[in-house]
Image (cartoon, rainbow, N blue to C red):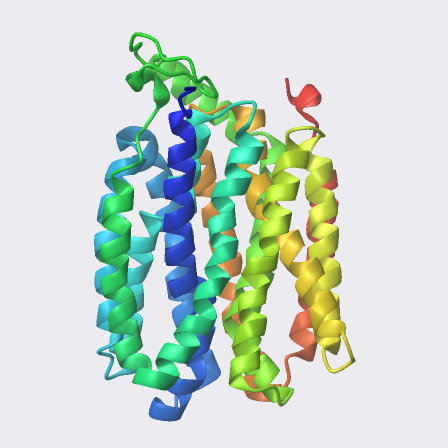
Length: 407
């Protein structure tokens, strides 16, 4: 019987980590906003700032994590990340003040840095080459499937309160995450494989490069304009995405949509992104990746625009389809294009820096949306502005050189 290539087990493990972590701290956070406002009387801006602190794992920490994962491997970072993240979520359940609330999110940021995109994408990138788009598409679908957790969180809050819900979710982080982290292994050469290869052979050491040569190559890559265009477009994507997933339930509440239905809509955002993640991951292995990304940004921009008009019949479903497929596709293609254009030797560092750029948008997006709502009692203009910015990101992607031009 033909042995399943071990890289696919790593994809499955990364899928499960992404599923739980994203469902609890990213997509599920919107369900806690209104209970927090009711209990403490905090403004939307104050609570949204916590979402920005959560983005530290993509900001100040992401470049550092990129260097660490290239140095120590994904497995060690996953273990430490799951432990710290679980502690942060439990601590959040004991919140008594705004300072304690922010402090818990700092722990969450540190923990999430060790078990989210930079680490899991590096693990997958090390085990795949020609099939990297497909592998990352399946892995990133864990972020999409995490939408299933949102209605569960809404139900838990209704049944047990928001504090008990957070304690349950934090304990679940340890119970689920630690065993899964054991499955992940670092570069395939140390286990007798090569990227994409299913033929088992005597273990060979991973190819090494002199430190000076590697450092010089890395500096040359950082000078490329195409890399900057990719980084800036990711900043815009995260700005819009984090604003939407943080404020979608409060926004739909202003449209007089019930919390349960709003929770289902919030769950639909990541769930429907699965089609874009898998579909565009497959397309990216066949066609030029930058054009696939351009199509994805077009879909996301159209979805963002329709969010302004959800009162119109059927618009919410158009938004869910276009926006979800667009951002889901980009989440896969951003890593696949880095792997294809610049190889795997510096992938962790390059992905970490990209996440750092994205975090700038992740900090600005939710806070800006909350600030605008606090003053105007409407999200209309911020959604409209973000749709225009996504159009700018589309232009930046089209300016990226093709792989043939880079080589």
